[in-house]
Length: 411
Image (cartoon, rainbow, N blue to C red; front, side, top):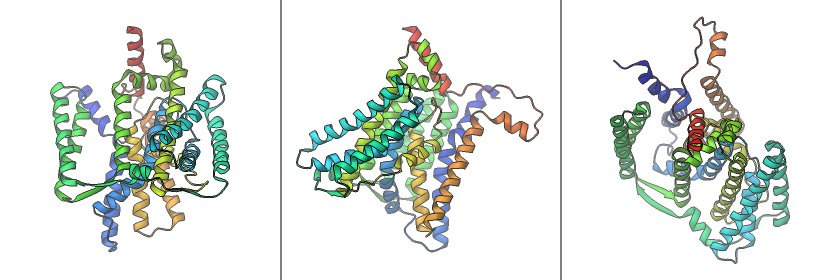
C-alpha cells in the first residue's frame, strides 16, 4: 500500500493549483464546441479554427513568456507594449535596410529600454511599477514622435515571411508523436521512481494527445510565428527548469536576501530579466509589423495587461519566485480561446470583458487559496482540524531557492 508521502505528490500534480490551467484549456473548447454545435454555429470545431487561435495567441504568448521571467525575478514590466510599438515603428522607418541589421537594431532598442528599467529599479531603488509605467508613457511618446502621429506603412517582405509564413502539418502524425514521446517520458519517470505524480500527469496528457490524433485526422496549418512561439517557450522552460541560471532566478524572486547570502548576484539577475523582457517585446513588434506591414501609434496598447493576465492564469505569482512559462503560454491560449468562442457565440463585446474579468478573478482565487490561505479557509468554514505545515512541493520556488543556495555553497 502506498504511503501518504508517495500519494501526496500525485495529488499535488492533479490539484487545481498545479493543473488548473490544463483543466481550463480542456474545458473551455469543450463548452464552446458543445454550444456552437447546439446553436448550429459552424466552424468552431476543426483544425482551421485551431490554426487561427494559435496564430492569434502568438503576440500575447511571447509577451507572456518574457513577463513571466520578470515576475519570477520579483519585478514586473508595464513598458513592454510601448517597447513593441517603438520597435515596429523603427523597423518600418528602416525598411530599406536588409533584415539582419534591422533585426539587430530593433532588438537593441528593446534591450536598452529594458536595461534602463533594470538600472533604475535595482540601483536607484525606484518601485518597478512607477518606473515601468513612466517608461511606458515615455516610449509611447517616442512612438508618436517617430511616426509623426500617423500610421506608418512599408513593405517588409522578410519580416512578413518571418511572421506569416505558412506550412501544413499532419495533425495526426504530429500530435501522435507528441503523445508517444509523453508516454515514454512518463514510463521513464516511473522506472526512476521519482516524481510519479508528474509522470502520471504526463502519461495522461500523452494518452489524450494520441486520442485527439485519432479523432481529428486532418492537416493543421501553422504560421512561422506559432513555431517561433513554441521554440521560445521550450527554450525558456528548459533554462528555468533544468539550469543553475533558472534556479538562481527563482531564488532571486523567492527570497532575495537568502539568495545574496548564497552568493547570487540578485541585481544582475533582475536587470538581465528586464533586458530580456525589452528584447522580447521588441521582437513582438517585429512580428506585428511583419504581419500587418503597418503600424498605428496606438497599436498594442494594453497588451502588457493581457500578458500579465495570462501569466496569472498560469499560476505565476506577482510577488516573485513562482511561475512557469509553459503555463503562461497556456494562459494566453485560454484567453484567446475564450475570446474566440465568445465571438462564435456572438457575445457582445462588453459582456466579453465582464466574463473575462470573472475568469481572471476565479483563477486568482484558486491559486491564492491553494498556495497559502487554506488555514484561513478552514477558520472561515469552521474546521476544527489543526492545521499542519504542508511539505514543500517538489519543484516549488522554495525548493528552487534551497537548491540554488546549495549549488552556490558547493562552489
